[in-house]
Length: 197
Image (cartoon, rainbow, N blue to C red):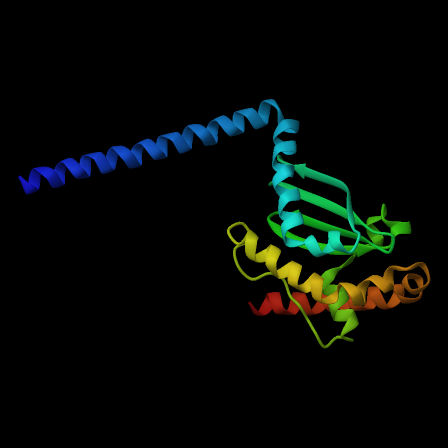
């Protein structure tokens, strides 16, 4: 009797797991077919989740007067996305590229030119005069998206008030050469650390 009940339980367990796996496969295939047929609708749908995450993790930016002025989601490019937040003082770009989240800054008057963007980690390195090196995120970018958001939000919140003044017209142009030097040093150290890993 006990053996029969165990066998029956095993059968139902197997049927349940197979059913869940089947539903997951149907959902996955259906979602990709829908994305192929209507990519703009999928991108708009996914962008809502990105904006929700930005508001959750970076709510302090909205309290400081930043507003989302542009956003995109590229379903066919690994789900890359970008959010541009702007205040009267500075433009902040929060971007996910191949599952890695990064933040960069630009002056308001040069926000359309990618060459004027300076990354958060580079700015931290610059502010500390080379003493504080914040490397890339260690861990699985895809599975640890929450940890990436948390890490970047903590860093941005800590350094934002020190960074923003450098993106005013006078100080930005005065510091531009130093930004480039800090960026080159930062990239050199990042490359050395990658070789050691």
